[in-house]
Image (cartoon, rainbow, N blue to C red; front, side):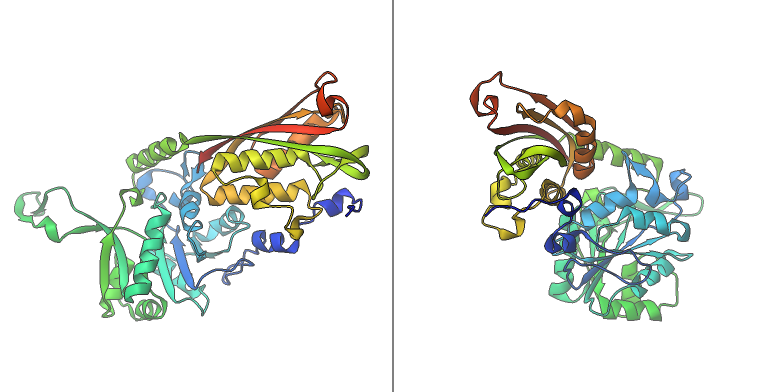
Length: 415
């Protein structure tokens, strides 16, 4: 079946099944999402000043190797599967900034209170009635692994108890008096250093919060004070709390070691010319040029980049992910494939570092629009893209002017 010529504006429209996966509206007190989420919610508390950190920004907005503490915490929370409802609690003057940070995710942002307990109450007030399990997580524990979050959820659902991750105390602990003199040694076998997220059955935890009369040190204490059981499961050393400048340096070192996990992928795509079609190449339209044959728009550059990204992430290839048998992708623009591929790569825990593409063809003349193509592609993959072009001096199908070939190399790093 021949494809109908389309203008650039219609080419860039996302199909409904793609738009539903990437669109959202940020609001103050109502969770909104077009993506199906579970009946579990995570309240991420980032309303503290972080005075002990010695920074001018609130702790959640302090940079850890180029990205904020809050963003790094959300990376792990948003990777939970099945997806959870997320409420972020931030200082009142940071609400708009936080909303911009999470645009495109199933996340609600609310202003916190004067104490942590009041901030958690603000988060609880934003939850939907369908929430069965709620977790409270400190954004300051920014490197807490997704696996630990999922473990807490599973244990709450299995037992119906409050669940807290914790680590055994490995150092000798002594009780001292006001002058620092040792009074006695504490049996550390009964001690645990507790972490977040702390999980609870939603209804019981919300009632415990309403009934609380004191200012408790953590959410588990609120739950216990209401007469409920809390159990400790094995925590994770990565769930440490960023409180002091030393903690911040430690987090940056750990993030730096993660960034050393570099993946390289190569993608190749080839399309023959089709005089009846408009030409889309490198995400831009080329008026007056013969188009490329294919199930979609035939954009060999975009397709090669997709293959390179998927290859680097170990996620297969374009054909296995978006095959020609899938009618949803008939006539789809290269921009759609790049957007969907980037989402898969990010979900797998990677970010694009850079992409390089070599176009092999007699025409069109890439050099005349190189800067435009690089800007377009860089915006789509959210990383620098460089584009080069060459010919084969009359050799082969590209040399005979029968089509276009594109070779892409992509570098990924773990997020």
